Image (cartoon, rainbow, N blue to C red; front, side, top):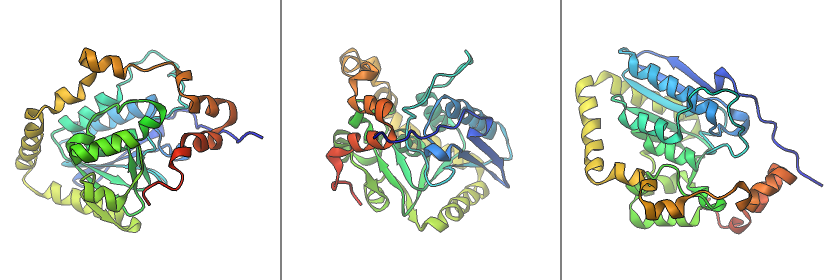
Length: 277
């Protein structure tokens, strides 16, 4: 007996929502049925929303969050290619847009922020997590490397190796201890806390807020941040990082043939009873 596939909603202009508020903008990943899994539609529309926030002089800070019960469950492994030839930014492009944006970006995370979701939240200038948030670099379960190598700069060498080599989930309290997040609050307080931080940033001297973001980023860039992100440019690393065929991951074959629940059971079999609660 096969498990039913999750019915994937078609791409929509509403896959990312933009709301301008007093002094800040709220950007919401809006594919809650698939836990805001990142596909070409989200990448295109998130870039547009970030452009809009950056170009509006009345917006002094940005909150990035996810609709429903998750921030983002990472890359959408069931995504189909776009139906047109319009340009689509890469995940790296969007992450670097957040890094380079002169205005501070706050991630407000509830539920899953795993894989590319962990990286997207990590590239934001501050991350506020609900107490039900779950993080993790899960790509190794499919034999993939991290699309955006930000984790070593967030948590340090030993913890980064544990996260990237084991692919375990990390709860909110552990994420705070590791330095993946700035604050953990009760779920019902998440947006209130993010808004409070955004309003405080908006009320501070704008030029100095921008300067201090640049200074912190500069310290990491002098330590090799950009070179680390471009690891695929190193021929030796690129050979290891080169993706195989889709059939190289047996779990994806299970997904196509037996459905989502069978896929999850197959993928996570090693981790039964071992997840960090």
